Image 1: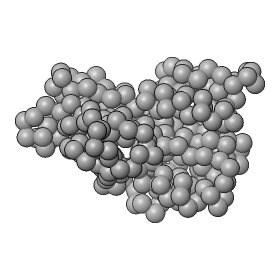
Image 2 (image 1 turned 180 degrees about the vertical axis):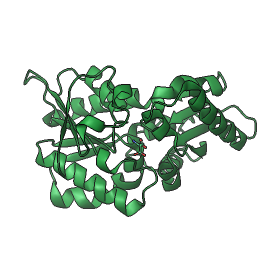
Image 3 (image 1 turned 90 degrees about the vertical axis):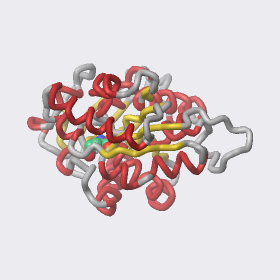
Image 4 (image 1 turned 45 degrees about the horizontal axis):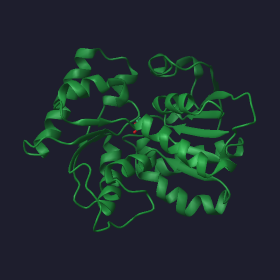
Length: 282
Ligand code: DGL
């Protein structure tokens, strides 16, 4: 069983892609709705809450956990992988949404931490949208530039946008925010058209059409859920010990730290998923 963690409902955009791409795998989703959003919290809190949630999922039987929240992955993934996991669950693994996106932008595998002379720069100019915390962490910027120093990334925080999507804001309200953030990001590239755009927050795929409308036609929007699904499929092929394939009868279950009757934005995120949330204490 694979654990999928998010601060709230947003990670369901990632789960949906995983459920579709991996029909033999069982998933246990945990949303920390009681403490969401993480996007404006301080780093120590994000690391502590994310660690607690992963520990819970692992104690519930998940040997592999995907952090489906960009904020949590940007701030906590390295610390958890390097210091917490080897001490507490040394045989288990934690993956984060950040990794496949960095690989796609840099055009090299995650383990290649230094550029090679013959590397080809796939996306010379990139715009990255995320929560305030994801942008402040500079995790995408640093991880991509380590591997592809020529990649010019303009980062743009979109404070409040994730909350508006959860609250079911109107298209007009959302378009107003998205157009302002896109305009600011484009200014950062001083009139040059970006080659790629990263919607670096679990909620933004739901307003992808608005980003597409505001961005230049030539800018390619990279789909995080699809990249994560491809990366996880590839990982499970290489590490079958973390896969349920062949065991039959897959399950997809949903847990929350919040009140299942009052989860923000659930209807928006559950359109293509089925199941009820159960409340848990971490
Ligand atoms: N899931 C978060 C992310 O991808 C957004 C919501 C939050 O701020 O907690 O960054």
